[in-house]
Length: 484
Ligand code: BG6
Image (tube, rainbow, N blue to C red; front, top):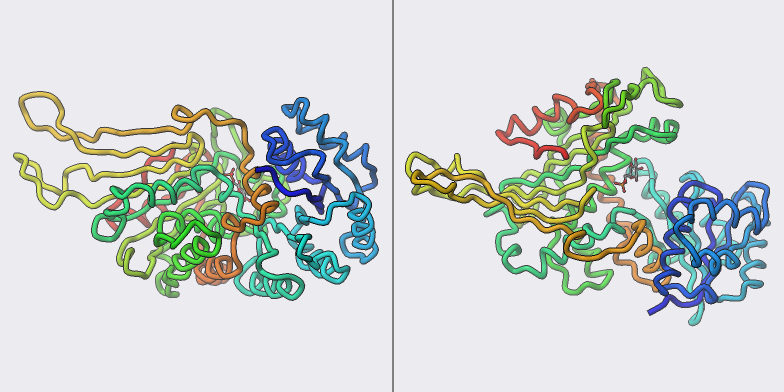
């Protein structure tokens, strides 16, 4: 059904996230009747000079596909110029919420992370987070959530001083992706899979998030962040949790999040002496991507050319629990790679014995299951088959299914589910404090070691990444699945 009447207050209303993703997603929700325009309002808050008309005009630019939905939505958009660090801004928000008239409010922090703590604190001090039986008050926080374990713990502590965990909606936009949500269904609705989903049948798992884009206009943010912090403890660990979790008792938010949290918590902390053999990092040199010449990372705007920020990272991790004992999880992510490709590969163990002439089991192509998340969502399974002919020759064949062919799916930004779930109070697809902290704890030893120096390899833009990543998996006698 449609969401309850509410105002969404967006801090950072004139920024990129609001324009490109949040407002188009809200418009799609109105289109699908999941939000009723007359029971909804957006109150944008930002430092910039402006009024309702100027904000509507600015937001319309990215709502070109919105059609008549925009006519219904735009009159529900209001603007408030204000400094996030000043109490008077929050008094003004309070007054404006009163004027709009809905008791429920969701506060969306689409701002630089330095403001997360301040905004939460001021919302609390103004009484804007006080809930009643008939009024919810919720806060959505974008990533990056902290810069390391310590800062994430400090931020969680600060938030929880002014609100309850059930009011906090920590966004990881990967959780808004349809296929990511589907991993759980694929696993737990198919007994066939669950029976072999463990260390007895699975040799290893690969999780890849390859991008063709460079740092774009985000040099300042990215140079202070790097591929590890930008992608691993959040997005890649969410994928790891989805493939690795135990079946939850229900699909309820706490049941699901508890199981995910347990997997992340079980990631074995790497020992200082293992850093080099368990990781690889690199940064892109100039090269060619999609037939276009592109600059080296060092020549991108707003980055330190002599710094050591990585744009690629590969890791080998172990999940120390019953199901995954001894199964390596290889993770990799990087910018300016050969293709855009987000996928999970489940590599099964070879058959135990081959009775075919002149073949031994080790040479049979092992079964692999590929869960494709981007760009074309789907699932593929490779099996071995006999090539027609008098001799026995065994080759891999594929069973494939794509979401696009199977279902007619409408346009979506990925934020629709997240915004709708926040409005209806379902926290399943949001990060809980303990998940975030366990994620940071698992990557902290790498970050600490790298901060003391060491070599960052270079890789050519448009390649599959640095040589060290090939070595990382090659030393174990395994290979990366081809990107793209
Ligand atoms: C963001 C990162 O969280 O995720 C970006 O900050 C990255 O650097 C992006 O490009 C990837 O998301 P998607 O949805 O394009 O795979």
